[in-house]
Image (cartoon, rainbow over all chains, first blue to last red; front, side):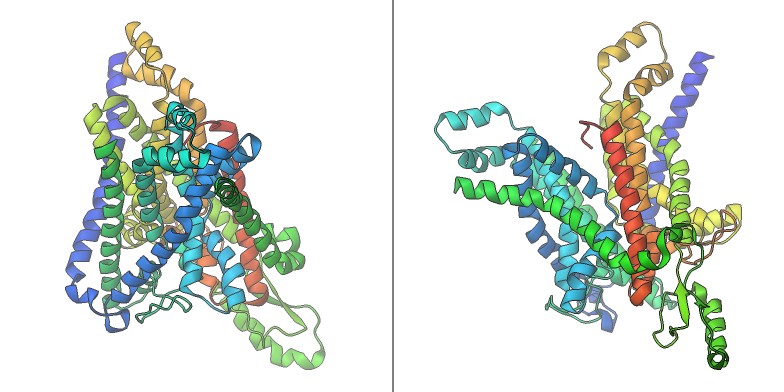
Length: 267
Length: 318
């Protein structure tokens, strides 16, 4: 009886894992079939106004890239503070708050940026979108940096100090160097996460049908346009949404796997 | 240089605090008109975008009535506060009850659906599977978490919902389908954090139990669960906190209608979806109302997540 129950429960558990994998497979296969059937290389050459996706892909990457330019240095330096300089309660408070902020509703961040940037500047812009995404990115990068730095042995720091290096030198030349791979992985995963975000962009960057490099205007966004296209009645729009989703997912998963691959090879 | 770098790093760290306070203050200021207008009754009021007459001068009755009727009929449509229609003697009422209920119920459904499967996956990864399988399946499950939420929404609407509706009847866009897709979304996160909690159980404890002749299930039930209980509850609450604020997956599936769901498979709306769909067109009191909803959502999820962090996951890194 005990053994039977054991088998039964372990069977159920394995079944759960299969269910989890089945969902992943189902979503990926759906995306692949729907995506491939509407996929065309002209999608990369035309803008949305002509039935292509070029402006959207470029726009999405630009918004996410600028968000990274803002978010990664700030997050890293903040992470260095709470691990290397911070003493006591304040650093602990920041660590906890940033942990909470990772799970903050992204649409609320969108509303915040709308109120503090979009309204005062008179309209949606690529910059506003980037700022919304960077707010999402900062706590992720802080957490990664913090936990990666915690893996660096204390002896390394002490050796640096003993050689007469200043604390700043030790951090930049020794601590960061030895945690480099882990931090890079974390940063790539953070990028993969924000590049697929929709909700924070809905009322900050919005989207646009035309090619644009001017981030002070409403800016083309792949994810926001997927949402618009998927809700349109014409089949052509929905097909385009599937092709766009396929491209987006491939992008996100490739970046994500690259991040994991780096640690696996070095770590 | 040394001092400068230290200052910069302190400033960046403080940015987190500044942003969080900034979000709170900004949301509060922006929702001030709605808070003044509707007060705390907002939370239990289920009217949405409905005009009522507060004071009716006789001369205005005739021209006003058509407008009012039209607006009552259209009360399910986006929040468009037509400045011409809002006259000194009518006022538009917004209540947050429907989206609040929609948010809580869809999260609850997601939780009920995801919990057993996530526990199963966690047990499989931590205890059953051989190392290399556990590693590969673990990555696959984490990839499921990396898929953008809008993809879950589209897949849910066009492929998952028709099957669910076929099985249980009702609408394809409903509280049920939205909750289930939300469940699929939080599944990997919940499983991963639960697995990590289970992995903290010392091997010595497990080995002692095996040595006494316990089966694997007994070890899981009597050793691992009690040992990692606190961490597991924490991860469940954390997953719940994330589900509350999820927008895009739910936006495709919940139906976006401002009406209380009469059954589990009828459409309704949640706070993030109300914001996503109506923010662009809203202005005046309508916009302020959406900020009020955002504030409520922010406070709820902040509370839930900090609760999980401080009571259950203390010193636990997710």
